[in-house]
Image (tube, rainbow, N blue to C red; front, top):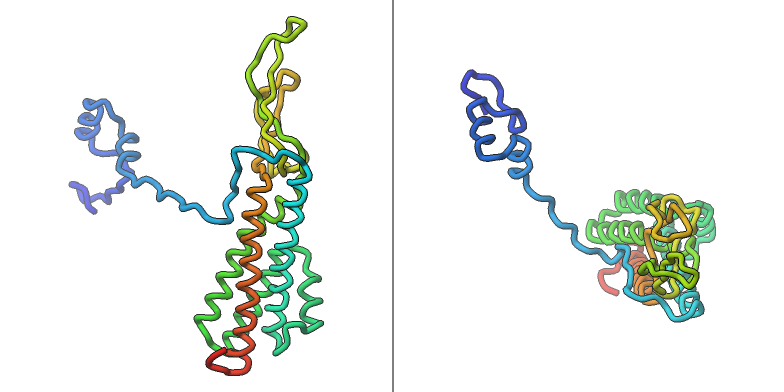
Length: 253
């Protein structure tokens, strides 16, 4: 868009002097105008792999521990099926021993998922099937998102969680803050730098507080466990479809 003297005009550039005077007369700056004219960011839709925190923890540590075990076992069920899927891409069998052992030798899930993705890309280059390939990519994407929750569960600690309550005068005349018991749940370890934030302490006994970025009770853990199981079931079904349709050429199961 050209301005009056032929110079290029940028939307973010300062306006002519007369327009600046008009904006100032309205009590607004050019920066205010730019911010007001920009579209607000599109709200992010909630996803099943988002961090969720309940309003109340568990009444006992045993309940939380049981839910932790269930969630981690459900993830392992998915990964077992994911390894079999990788095996499918290397031949007819879903228990190809060299393929399964190779999958398990990669230390991180990100690395294992990248290996499955590369195998799927080559497989469907040789045997084009856009619909099936898209389903595989969806499993890879969702499991990558959920792996963060799995890691938080696996590397968290179960403990009773308290929040700072009101400050009152103690029995000896000094001030004390009453704790509010949230309940038992899984939170990151104190040394987990990327899973905790530092904040001014609300306790009267410390200057700094480590604020956990997540806290999961059994309710949240069971929800994640269900999602992990769904991933495993869908992966198992896809593996069977690959065997019948892409490897054996059958048109129906």
